[in-house]
Amino acid sequence: MSLLSITQLLPHRPPMLLLDALVEHGDDWAVCEVWPKPDQLFATRGKIPALITIEYMAQAVGALAGLLHHNRGEPVCVGYLIGTRQLLLHVDEISVGQHLLVHVRNAWSGSDGRAGLFECKVESAGILLANAVLTVYEPPARGSSVT
Image (cartoon, rainbow, N blue to C red; front, top):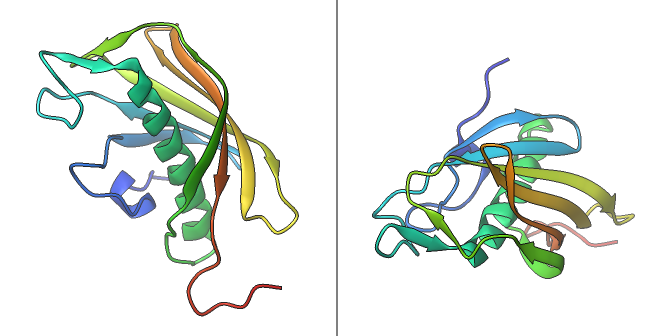
């Protein structure tokens, strides 16, 4: 099975599309890759602040959600990062060109499937750069009823 392109999974577009690819996934987890580029948003003098890893994690959660929607024949939806817990930044910055893997795993989903907690980490060459638990929310699609 071939993997979908990241633009098929996320509503983001440049300059805010920060992920390069979905490289692996399961029913409740995904791994995305990032190759930060010199002209990428947030890059300054060859470095990107480690705090931007939160957005990498959030977009990886979005890619997993987009994949689930795609598999059900539904359109990709916008989701919202509503909280971050246990954020640990193990570095101050990331180098442009540094290969990053962003791992996300659904740790909990609300009964309506709209809210969830995701355990996330960003690593490079097997070294942990950042990790967090993200709380996300996906509002109902326009025109759908909420029960």
